[in-house]
Image 1 (tube, rainbow, N blue to C red):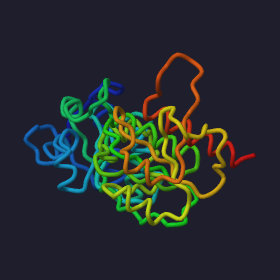
Image 2: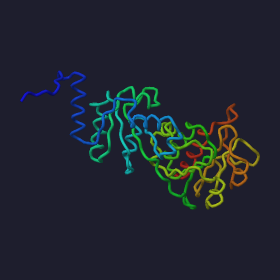
Image 3: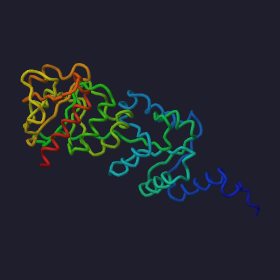
Image 4: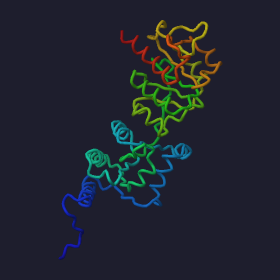
Length: 293
């Protein structure tokens, strides 16, 4: 019987793509090749990547880039589906991810590069993306050893940077109060560089209610003010919640009044203040430094 299957010259782009797709099939039968913008999966991916409303409605979010996807796969949480750019097929990263996908029975979609470029928000469009369910959080223990609290911090980059700092300095719990940027948006995820998967992130909670129930000290970071204690002069070895406020307005007066202490970061230079992320990360570092002595 005559073989009617297409023949590609060994080493050609078509040959590599065909063999990589064959490799996908050998590793997992759970893949779909998508070429059309009208495909429902492509539409859903693009909507999730660009619409906060869609992310909150579906409780799904997008991991944009191989680093985030790999970090997530290092957890035990389920992944909804993996997305690869057609041009990435055959690459080392793609082959590695497809091997993991095959072991875990994860659905894989191969998208045309143009569709990936439309969904990805990276300057150089990602070759790999994933859709995951937004993890549910656990209540923060009233006797937690360390908590980062963000009150109305609106910039996604600042939120991501502080989540990254929390993970780096061993803070397991974070509370994002009303008005704070959504932790699971693509911009916050990119800025945090995988920190989300090491943290318990509680969102939309009342900062005042948390402060009332928390048994440790609550420290309000403020600009230089009468009665404020220098950060390095305060004992941060006790159970502590570090409170960081809005980029422009800082912490609300009600929150400052409820705090057990007000702390300030000394600045011998000629700047009036630091941005929210810098202040929060410095405070977390100082707490870590004191606890390691």
